[in-house]
Amino acid sequence: MAKALRAGWQVLKAGGSALDAVQASVVVMEDSPHFNAGHGAALTENAQHELDASIMDGASLAAGAVCTVRRIRNPVLAARAVLDSGQAVLLSGPAADDFAQSRGLAMVDPAYFTTQRRVDALRSLQARAATGAFVPASEAEKHGTVGAVARDMQGHLAAATSTGGFNNKPSGRVGDSPIIGAGTYAKDGVCAVSCTGQGEIFIRRVAAYDLAARISYAHQTLAAAADALVFDTLASHSIGAGLIALGASGEPVAPYNTLGMYRGWISTDGQLTVATHRALHAMGPA
Ligand code: ASP
Image 1 (cartoon, rainbow, N blue to C red):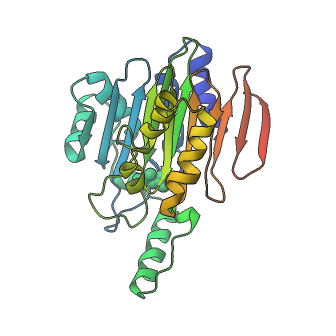
Image 2 (image 1 turned 135 degrees about the vertical axis):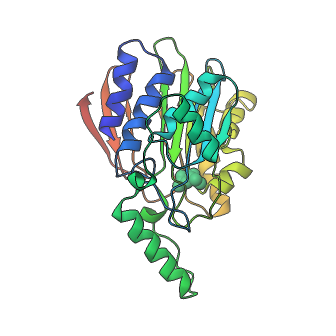
C-alpha cells in the first residue's frame, strides 16, 4: 500500500498530472499478489480471469475503461490507452486485449494472474456451494479491488479502479469498476472517487456519480456525502461497501461498512498514512 502511494506521490511531486499519479499507484497494486487486480485477481466460476479497470480525468471528464480482459498485464494501462485514443470510453473482451496489444502494452498468459490463494478460495467457495448450504464468502474471499484518487499541483483530480471482480463470478459478468459513474468518477471542483463492494449495487445506484451529485446539487460536504452513500444508500442493500475519495481541495475520505479496508493517503506536506482497520498508522514522510 505504501509502495503504491509513493509511486503516485513521485508523479505529483515532480509536477505530474493526477491522471498519471493514479495510474502509477494502480499499476503497483495490479503487480502485487496481495490485491484482487492484475496478478492475484479473483477467478470466475470457470476458473478464468476476467479483469475490469477504468480511469477518469477530472479536468476534461475524459475517461477510459476495459472489461473482461484476459491478457493485458496491467488493465489500468489499457484503460488509459482507451482514454488517450479518444475513440471509445469502454472496450470489452478479446477486442480490448487486442487493442492493448496494438498499443504496445505488455501482454501475458492468463496464468500470470493466478495465485494459489485465489485457486484455494474458488475451490472452497464452490465446495460450499455444492453442499447446497449457503455460506457467505469471507471478507478476504470477497474483496481486494484496488483504486486510487489524486489531486495534482494544478488542482486537477483523477480516479482509477482495477479489479478481478469476485471469486466464482459468472463468466462474462461486468462489475461497477469499469463503469464510469458507478465504480469510478472524477470531476474537478467536485470530487474524485473509486469504489469497492458488490458491483451490481454500485451500478444500480450509480454510486460514484451519486457522490458527485450530492456535492454538486445538494451542496453536501464530501464527508457527509460519502457517509450517506456508504452507510445509508449502499448499506441499505445489506452489502459491504467502501470508497476512497478526494474533495475539490484534496481532502481525503475513506468510509467503509466492513470490518476493514486497506487504505492510505499522502498529505500535501508529504506525510504518509496507511490503515487496514480502524487504527491509522502514521508512517512519516513519504
Ligand atoms: N466492485 C467489484 C466488482 O463488483 C468488486 C469489489 O470491489 O469487491 O467487480
